[in-house]
Length: 314
Ligand code: ADP
Ligand code: MG
Image (tube, rainbow, N blue to C red; front, top):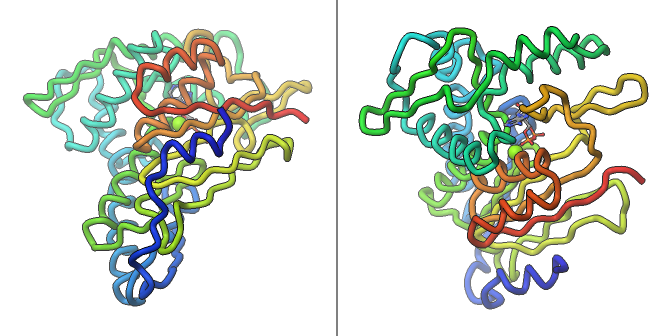
């Protein structure tokens, strides 16, 4: 299906009635190691600023909870207690873990929030410019496995069964944070808004006088650029355009195959459109690992999801 056909299906009537008194504002801040961007329409600069501040604050607090880079994050404090039984966690962490494990189950572990030890190896490979040893990969894989995570929702608790486990929510947290930020903007009375963090983007109501938000997702080949017009939707793109290591002419992505412990070498960009970022983000990472056929079958299990898979080589 073409982007245009899909956009026509997703959009409601062209919205031209209200909103003539609204102005466009744009703000950026660095969060989750990326540039986070908010575009919104508001009646005044003070209203816009107040809304954007609330949304960035929410992203900041999610970063403090879900980051695997910060040793003091709630996530890393949970990992430090791996093997010690159930640990109480926040509602946000519980929800992201629930989504992640659901995806792990549905993908038979191709999406795996316990892949931290393996991801760490590949981060080092990227810094040092050389591949991890077979032994190091085997050791790291031995500390992964999504079935070792148990959730106790009624007690708001999580237990990790073995010491040395390291959770990594990098494949889903940004989409979740975009959703949460957009909800803040709605709460502040500015629903005509867009939130973007790296390759994850969510939009609310359309800009005044427009049918939707015009979004272009560039590709290695210009003819593959994706043109979208969206309202109340999320788009996530996973691929190796930014984070990868090239060794002996082979490019290894920062997305790893949890079955082999090796960075992906398939050069594709996967874009997923869904209602919410927590779905589009997780799915785009999962489909990158699964490949087109199994990936599309997975996407079919989620309502209102569209998948675009484009080659990254020109
Ligand atoms: P980006 O971070 O570029 O937006 P993704 O959403 O695809 O891209 O997430 C990639 C991140 O997901 C990696 O940096 C790592 O933290 C984590 N990750 C890597 N491989 C997997 C995997 N197989 N399952 C779950 N998370 C993964
Ligand atoms: Mg993702």
